Image (tube, rainbow, N blue to C red; front, side, top):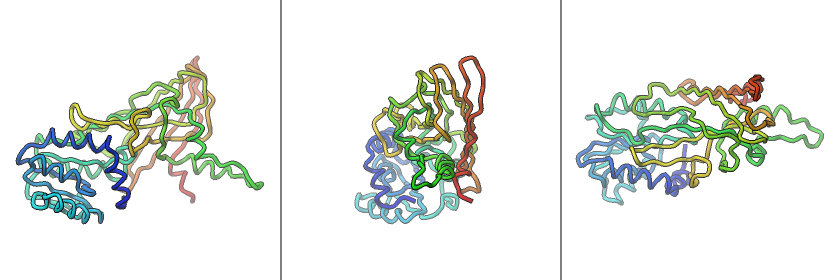
Length: 308
């Protein structure tokens, strides 16, 4: 979970913060009932109260909710905001909300139990015709050539020790990276979208067709989201966009892949929420030559990143 310094890093991200502030001000109407799901330090709750909400239910299971109470009182919103320290799945309310506002992203929206929690709260506690902020997150992907990023996954032999087993473990992890636009080796493709208004499962599948635009070495795949808070307000953590705290999600290949312009790497990607706890990631990588010949390269999963 985030500590106070972690929440501070989020609050200092003004790309994210300013977009949410504008979306909340544009959406919430006088006398609205609002749920701030995973309220953290309570900033969205305060903004909702200032926008005219009659009642804001701020739900948070972590200790940071005590800080949120202090901030609400210091900003004159203590009577409007009702703080509920609990798992959202254990919360019942005396009324349904007109608006649910949340930021449950990790590097991607596929973060721990965030989607499962949102689905539950939406179905039980949002009034018919109610609004979600954000509305949806289209996901994007591209092939990456970045020796500096991949260096974090490489274990070079030293002191006469063969570190090959650690290389396999390291390249089985999906981690945050900061990828530059110049490091993209393919056009950006749509990887799918998470529409919070209709999503019914926290699981995700994508089939990515990534054609190299130049000769190079493919080190992995970058994934990111374009957050649509309202119809015309949002932000992105795309490579080349103004930097946010999110970075991008990087799926490394088990080994670097030399590739020529016009060749395609196909990645079959699955992310499944397991035991209502965290995601099991799997990615199968195939190289397709310019004449259509297919060669399976790697079968990877973060399951293999856990020493047994």
